[in-house]
Amino acid sequence: MTEKRDRTASVPPGSWLTIVFTVWVLFMLWASVGLSSASAWIPRLVLSTTMICLLLQLVSEFRATRSLLPQTQVLVAVGRGGRTVVAIAWLALLLLLTWLVGVAVASAIFCLAWLRWHAGEHWLTSLVISAGLGLALWLIFSVLLGAALYSGALWPSG
Image (cartoon, rainbow, N blue to C red; front, side, top):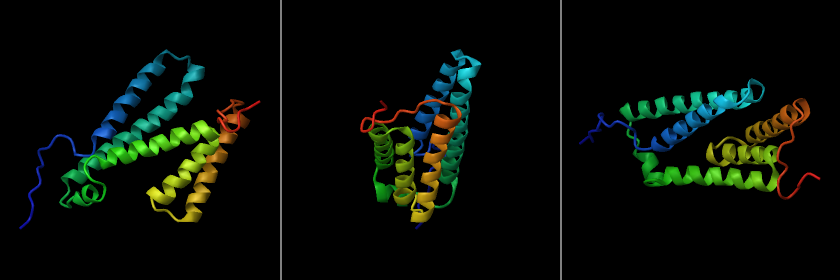
């Protein structure tokens, strides 16, 4: 006997975190209105790109809910509310790494961990992408823009 899915549900079960992030990014975009055009282009570019990705994520989640394939595998593997706990744990790891070793190094380490253990990418792919991210952050902000990135509590800039 097949299980009937409720197609009238307004929000897919795991989409609340995506919706919260979308509202938060909208608030941050609104807050950037008061910035001068010289200092607002980077936050607006990053936030706009993030907003596009969040909206695509929401569309993907709504499509997955409407598909005929059951989504119970994720709920069984992680448990109810587990997806939110996992997302918060990853965010906490990023914040901890940023505090300890700084923005560029933490971003590279976090990217490596995310790609290797969360996304299941191969080691070579994970290492190349994470090294590229760390190098790009250092080149763009420190070298090209001359903006000092936070260097971390372990190696404070002198």
